Structure formats: C-alpha cells, structure tokens
Amino acid sequence: MGKVEYTAASAADGVEQAFKMLEGRWKLVILFHLFGGKLARFSELERAIPGISQKMLIQQLRQMEGDGIVRRIVHHQVPPKVEYGLTDWGQALCPALDALLTWAGQRAGAR
Amino acid sequence: MGKVEYTAASAADGVEQAFKMLEGRWKLVILFHLFGGKLARFSELERAIPGISQKMLIQQLRQMEGDGIVRRIVHHQVPPKVEYGLTDWGQALCPALDALLTWAGQRAGAR
DNA sequence: CTGAATCCACCTCGATACTG
DNA sequence: CAGTATCGAGGTGGATTCAG
Image (cartoon, rainbow over all chains, first blue to last red; front, top):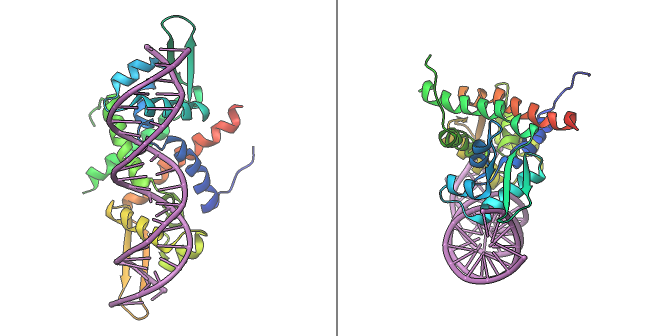
C-alpha cells in the first residue's frame, strides 16, 4: 500500500475518534479486566470494579460493543449467563495503552 | 532495569491518569499543532483550529501547562505576545499517539 | 493581542427502584 | 443474574462581554 501523509488535522481526527471510544469513567478499567482474552460475567465485573453502578457498567459495555472493542457472549439458560470479552481489535489496543503507560511513567523519571 | 508487574487495577490507574490529561474536546487537536517543537501564538492556534472559542483554547492550554505537557513563553512587550510549545515530556507523547493511530487504522484493514 | 468573567444549554454520571 | 427506568446534581463546552 502507498505511503500516507498525515496533516496535523487528519491525524488529530483519527486519534480523536480512537480516544472517544475509550473515554468514559470506566471503560479503561473494564478493558484491563478483559485483556489477555479473559472472559468475565456481568456480575464478576460488577464485583471486580468497586464503585461502578449497573447502569454505568452496562452502558460502557454496550458502547464498546458497538465500537467493536468488546464482544458479548450470551448463554441461553436459567439463570441467565452473559460473558464479556475483547474482540481481536480490542486486544490490539494493548500496545497503544502500553505506550501511554510508558509515557506516564516517564514523568516520574524526568523530574 | 527491573521487571514490573502490573495488576489490572494499577495499570488502568496509570493509563487513566494519562488519559485524563488528554481528555477534553480540543487538547489533542492543539497537541498535534504543536508537535515537532513548533511554537504557536495564541491567535495562531485560534485561527488554526476552526470552531474553538477563546475560553476553550485558554482553558485547555492552561490545564496542559499545569500537567507539564505544554510550556508557555511570554514575551513582555506591547502588544502582548505569548507563544506555546510542548515540553520534552509533551513531545514524548508522540509514540503513544502513534500507536493509537495505528490501532484506529487497523479497524479498516480488519473488515 | 491575550485573557478573564458570565450566563446557559447540554450531557454525563450516580443513586435508587423496578423487571424478565 | 442481567438489565431497564427515572430523577437530579454537577461538570463541560459555547457565546458573549469586559479588561490589561
């Protein structure tokens, strides 16, 4: 494929869209609980993330599902059982988040 | 250097703090206009970023200044002249933002 | 030119209670 | 267990006006 030139504006656009998908009080926290291909049930996440409400949990999950980051696995049975995991594209977030973590860490070292 | 173990919670914490510094409707856009060590005056940024208000511009700049991402260079003269640029730490953001851009790009390729 | 100060509409989030 | 419904407080961004 051809080389692509990014203007400041278009690059900002791309990153901004990516950012929007990860914005929200709880998305990152949820994401980290799902990294490594781990699956978690709704109630497991609820317990694993102190302070989150059901409303927020389901809302953030739904949005990320809509963005193609998270996948939802429904087991038709009683009592209901639903598991959440990352899509391949969701897993691909790791390096980016790692870079951010590195950046955050550089602050302490720099002063 | 020593190997560091991150729990899901602590990693989320670090990235979340980093994220908070970049959150906001305009910060990324501003950042991209400052990458590469470029300096820009207040009014230049205002013109370069259509749709932003003075309030937002100064607000986002101040916050990033407080976070140590942006530096403010004041030239004492009339008429007033103030330039903005990135700190070294701010420049170090590039790889992280690049990773995010890559990730965003992978979506189109995957489907 | 740079920036501070108001006023206001909107959206997000939290708490609570309820349903299949 | 998994999710929905509703209400209200607070924050955020936008427009406008004023000041050094």
